[in-house]
Length: 447
Image (cartoon, helix red, strand yellow):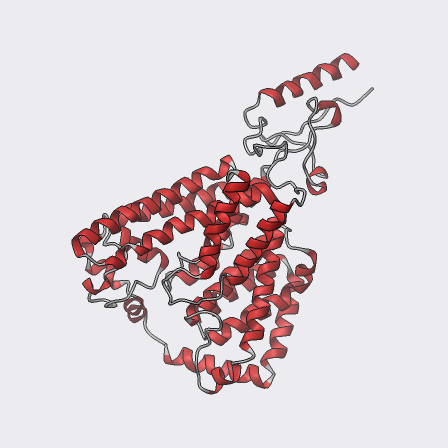
């Protein structure tokens, strides 16, 4: 029997040595840890954490006009260069196909916009492509930081979003009376109320994914009903119909998995609604909804969808993103839709690339890790939200959760390779030992 056990252990060790999956496809270049393992807090890691925290906190602060890079965008580029200098910008192998599709989309937008710039001569056609390449930087930086900081990155991001939302609530207290009495849509630190509402929706979606993966810090789990109430208050001040609908979807998805959170949040919102300010806020929102009531055809025309079928000659390769004076529908403005804008600006080719990105994301990462996109997609039916950095952080988070799910398990001591050390957290060590094909690695019981 001892001989049989020894032979079984040798077979499994040999498998670990020869399997291409177990040869560490995600292993960092300079150590023996897997992405997601908790690192030592070195001075370099501390600096990167401070830069990342600052970037998140500055994200809702708009200094320049809408459509131009903001301070947080410059800081994100600087942070990516710091990561490149300190770590060589390591990326998990399983995340490269997603990044490749984003780079392909950005490259195609540059080709289309460059072509139309040569024909039309409008320099405004050149800026949008920079945003698509910037989206690639955001996505890649998040993945690279995850390979370095592990789950600490996710916890830090959640805390930063919580602080940011609380800070915006404090700022809103200075202008809430003016906003309600004069029926003005609040922008807070942004330049446009729709940007404020969309930011709250994306932050809520990010927290939703972390909560479903049990990666929220403990104090945020307790604070979650109040946090969602803060987001609801922010969106209510903007009077955004799409924002309120999308946030309602987030609350519903939270409540499905965490009934206690839903009950506490419902009770809290009921108490706030009965307050004088809450009653006035509900009245303002109701009046705006009544004023904006339109038929489906009128709503589609108002959002600019008619531009697509009235300019079919652009559907194959796209009309470029800019120089909107060429179109009668929504003259001088962009199409108010995320995917509609992609189809009109970059044609079927660009639309297929972005759909391939999300199809691969949903197929590989699973429904549970990508459900956070539903509120963003709902909001994107009436607004173009593809340039918001938090949107691509959610995409990168979905890939990180996919890596967490496929992280190889620690082998028992008798089967571990010589000199091999575990970098897995106790959360994973408590699970049954399995290989990447889903089969348990068990030894024969001693008899």
